Amino acid sequence: MATTTDPVPSANTSAKRPARTQEQPGVGGPSRFPYRTTAMGVIGSILLLLASFGAAGTLVHDPLLSTGPLSWIRYGHGRAIATAVLYVGFALVVWAWVRLGRYVLDGRVGTRAVVVAALCWMAPLLIAPPLFTRDVFSYLGQGAQLLYGLDPYAYGPAALDTLPNVVQNVHPLWQTTPAPYGPLFLLVAKVIVSITGDNLIAGVIVNRAVMLVGLAGVLWALPRLVRHLGGKLPVTMWLAVASPMMVIHLIGGIHNDLLMLAFLTIGVLAALERKHALAIVLVTIGMLIKPTAAIALPFLVWVWANHLPEEETLFRRFVRAVVPSLGIFGVVFVAGTWLSLGSFNLGWITGLQAPQIITNWLNFPTGIGEVFHTLVNLVVTVPASPFVAVARAAAWLALAALLVWQWWQSRRGGTEAILRMAIALLAVAILAPPTLPWYLTWGFVIASAFPWRRLHLAAVVAVSVFLVLVYYPTGEQGLYDWWFIAGVVAASLYGAASLLRPDPLGLIAAWRRLPQRGRDDDRTTSAV
Image 1 (tube, rainbow, N blue to C red):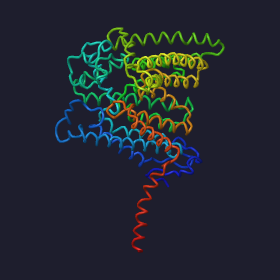
Image 2 (cartoon, rainbow, N blue to C red; image 1 turned 90 degrees about the vertical axis):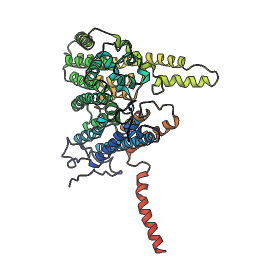
Image 3 (cartoon, rainbow, N blue to C red; image 1 turned 135 degrees about the vertical axis):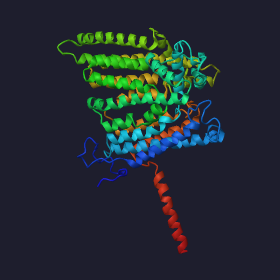
Image 4 (cartoon, one colour; image 1 turned 45 degrees about the vertical axis):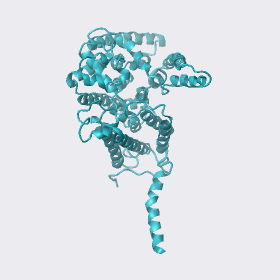
């Protein structure tokens, strides 16, 4: 008989039970909705919401909390308490996500339950300050520049002489830095600022509402992508939609990567369904939001070429695919740039260099350079920048070779081309400086539609938890606080182990035994 609580799988039998999803209701009975797990995540999100007003990307001068009886949450011990509560909320969300993952892998819940749970976890965050980042304030500042006639690819938001609340909340690193985003996204930001003005609370909420459009696009495309790429839909939704990377980073943090991902996923779907012109249009639009989407275009040309009649040679089919692809790309690129900026301003291409001022070891080549600098610095005092520059230059060469190799290996088209495209997007996120945590969603959302092994999913859990926690809730990096990083690594590994086995260290079981031990002690005392 179905119950209204979570299905409770046995740790010893979960690996033996055949998989079942809502799309297969006849196998092992109907799937059940995980009410308790969903509620756990909702409680965690509510704690994130409440604590975020003191511990996340708060405003310099909050019109609601800077003064009054609740102002204590923004300072001193109040802020420390808020930070602790925020981490507790995050732990509950991750706990719920991992437990939901076990149910998915055990075939006890299906796609609908996963999506509903994810949306429930996102709901409290819709009105929260940005979590683990302050990027949304840069979006507003750059949109304000475009609105008031300043070129965001030539100046930083500090050049504005209006909207002081917007300007002062942009992170100091980006105050004088040109925008690294595509012109279409700056047009979106301009429209938002034209509506919200200097009201940053409204600006944050409207930005997040726009990102929900991107979420809707991803939700629409993924089930159809799974049918082409061979994955299991509940697993894909658990990986791509319910994960902390989506809930905390892309929704809670409000990153425009989600808008780009919507156009990318729908574009890839269009290519697989032989709507190739539409695919090039959609991915080019995604590029006009976040330029990284351009990495996908050469791979889609191979998909197009392999859908042409096989009587011709591969080279002739490639030519027949690449020529219209370039034409479509050129038209959409020029028209999109002109409509967004009012001119054919290519300053945003050079603006891509701006984020490279971020230097930390989360970017693999930067970390290698820092390691070599540390070793040499033990002998002689030298600056770190030459080591980082050389390591990054070598990484650019390695990345170029890797991208060409992946592209050439995709020449047979089909699902292999899409898989290699996802690998290329991940490689860019890891090797091209800087590496920011949410950048890994570029390739990961596409990769989620492929089949996955349980052990690989556990690795994804570890990486996802790590990539959220390495930045503090305020948006500042914690990468050089080594005790903090040790705790982050431990938490990440524990989360990964929990997917493979409930309560891997026996902590919950020990906690549950405490009341029983107390009752046994009471009985012993009474007997004496």
